Length: 102
Image (cartoon, rainbow, N blue to C red):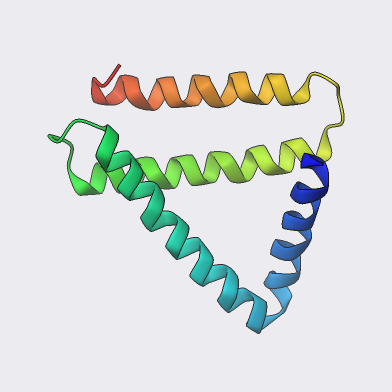
């Protein structure tokens, strides 16, 4: 079930690279998602952080999630989801350690 959704997402992103109409939709969705990620991070992180720091953290999280999507599509091991969850948790811990929020 998850792998079908992830494959569909990869297909959409790949098609959007070559189709201007889909690329506009992807760009708009990406911008909207970035705003949500920034808003959610800002609500959970120390108020002393600069907006530029939160924005950079959001972009790091987005890039990590893009890589995670590709890894989950390409790797078919039975432990892949559990390993990916551990990797994501480690990434979040690393981000939080940079802010003193842990």
